[in-house]
Length: 76
Image 1 (cartoon, rainbow, N blue to C red):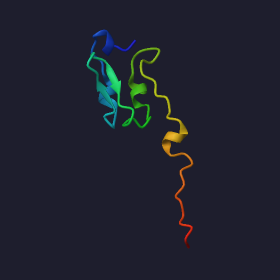
Image 2 (tube, rainbow, N blue to C red):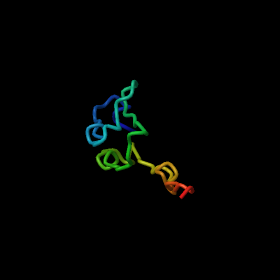
Image 3 (tube, helix red, strand yellow):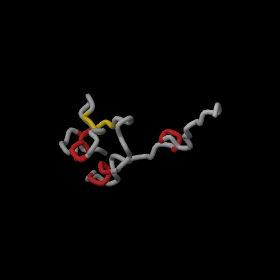
Image 4 (cartoon, helix red, strand yellow):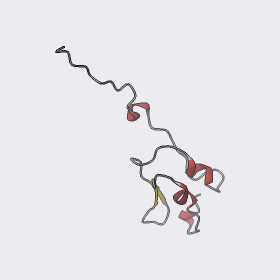
């Protein structure tokens, strides 16, 4: 259980995120901004709880632009 959600102060994940993707939610615990999170997992590494209270799941490849191709003009 995340220490922030149990009214204990920790928030190492908030302080560690180099992209400011982890913020404090209205309820007092951490919240991840999915569009900003890069999946670097630094928040997971500094989490003191076992099991970890924050786990980064990688975006599906399609969300990372997997298979994206520039279209060439066929008029040439």
